[in-house]
Amino acid sequence: MRKFDENYVLLEDMANDGYFPEFLVEKVKERILSVIRLLEGGETDMEMIQNRLDEMTLAINDLQEEFEENDSEIETVARDSIAVTLEYILQWFDIAIDVETALRERDW
Image 1 (spheres, helix red, strand yellow):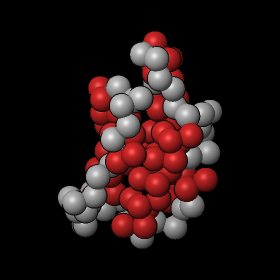
Image 2: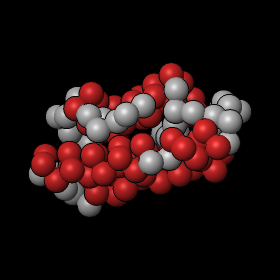
Image 3: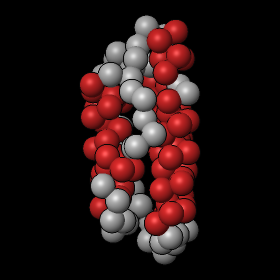
């Protein structure tokens, strides 16, 4: 079992952009952390990993209204930040799923 890179800043671009409420960035991070915990646990079954990625993405989809209620949205910077973070995670754990497939359930 491999631990995730403790020096990597999840969603760095979102976290550094005042357009995104900090508490909502934290909610997105929590969804991503569920994937990290699965991978740190040693999961290698690609179907199980993709299912968790789908769950994560659907949970992020569900945050869109809350972003809008707080004068924000999951737009270009957010989409890119989520994708860059996820791509790093997949590479860190040597998971052969491309980021587009990983985020196939997104509607943002």
